[in-house]
Image 1 (cartoon, rainbow, N blue to C red):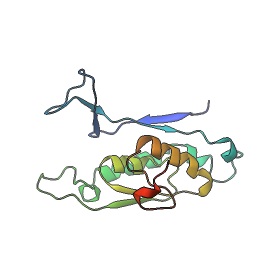
Image 2: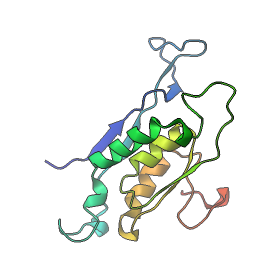
Image 3: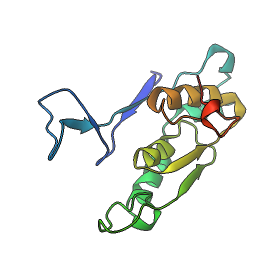
Length: 153
């Protein structure tokens, strides 16, 4: 059976919600922020299973999960200094994810407050663009520009 999608949450990354069942400690009700990704390629992007990188970019690899798990345990690599004292300043760190496929580590890093550049081969970027825009409509930039005027539609 083919995987049609991936959804995940990350400990400590919340969003406000309207449900009174989920309580915030000192503020509005909140719940873990959920990211949902499609792993389906457009018809024009389909390729034979072992032809290049297209099929590999539709998988969530164990190495991607382990990478962000490792990074999240290293306070010096975290953009907000998670695990550091309240007096520490926010760090200006940008993650560059080469050959990101679904881009899960970069998306989690962005949810934690970091700037991220996700890259991959052109033939699988359409899938990545859709997932980024669906989950980060306010901060998603196009692959050909760096300003707000170049946001993905």
